[in-house]
Length: 244
Length: 134
Length: 207
Image (cartoon, rainbow over the protein chains, first blue to last red):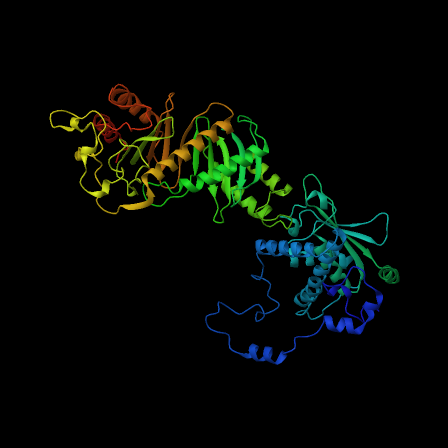
């Protein structure tokens, strides 16, 4: 049922008190995803010749498969993220609300990441494959997604001993937290909620719906060590049972 | 060779960061430090006008008999002041590194408000690392 | 290496003497009443007004050709006045009395600041900017000798102390015609000025 409608997390503006009616309302979702009203102009523009004084093709004209040289400056990203957090912080009440909105923003990135990553890795393959088992998917997130987004793999995957439906991805030095010092009065906040949103979207996109949250778990040598906690939906675990 | 303290003064002359390292200078209250920073801000502007030989920056090094203040002015008007012993030769280099840490840990931190006092654990850690190895 | 200017302030924050060497940015002459007589001819009010009226000084009988002038005299002895730098001289846009007040203000503030930060009776000695360096020497009686040099010059306190010992004590303190601490007169006189000039021109970093 969740896939017949656009996922509620795709909207930044969604309220914390989602009513189920809103989820199911076609009007609500259609307004959120209205297309640009003048596509004809866009198509005309894109056929025009690129002016000569441009240094190179824009990112829309570059081949999607080429990722080398397409990295973004960490500083530029840090400033952007800083503004995102400040902007969001002004518009929320409390830490939970802030984390949820960051998660939502991350979700919008995650859905694109999973699409692009699979395109890049599988499109040229003669036998493109799709992961259907949980552990390979988690491994893929830990290494491939992390590399695609942060340029390095995460540091560990752990399975909860208490709850069978909980898995953790641990990053000792998350790129997005590198320049962030959370003030004491917000000590519960983890800006990696943004990352959690990305992970949630990737899992969703691969058919593993889950609830993903971020928690700060500092160690003496890794001040900003963060645990991404994945709580899978029951249906996923049931399906895993069937595969055995 | 000793490093006594670090001040960061915003472009309006307000002290936004102050830290002591080695002992050797008077222990001042935060209010006294605020006043001194404001004074330094004013003096700095005047010293640029007193040049006998063409245009000049403001004061870069101020020396007493046992210590000196090295002042680094950024393009945006923020002043970094390092209080060291007279024979400290790398004060300028340290200030450059502190400025870099400031750019990273303060300006990229979403919980910092520009021109306001700096409360950032990340910056504290970076400064400790720089002064410690300096 | 260059020496640019010398200011002497007394303990009443008043500029009592000024002399300079190859300054390329000069102050405008002091405003009327802004500067004591007998500080420096070059920057006194009315310097640019053409010929001097030496008669308004009651002591100008001393300005005879029969002897050396040893006490103040504002507008005589042009040979000892500061040679104007030939070209490229710009103005600081400040009148000299304002400039002197700024110099004094900076020196006094820094002196207090150094004392405050050190927590003891420590002297402020110098500061430097990208283009010049200011040195301070203060006597126990509160006279402040301030010298501006290029920014590469080493400590000039010994030089200032020497000016104090050789020039100031000799030709100001021991000169009965100088009213010290008067708040009315500067301490300018030909012997002092030429002694300072000779001494400074002989320094290795004079140029």
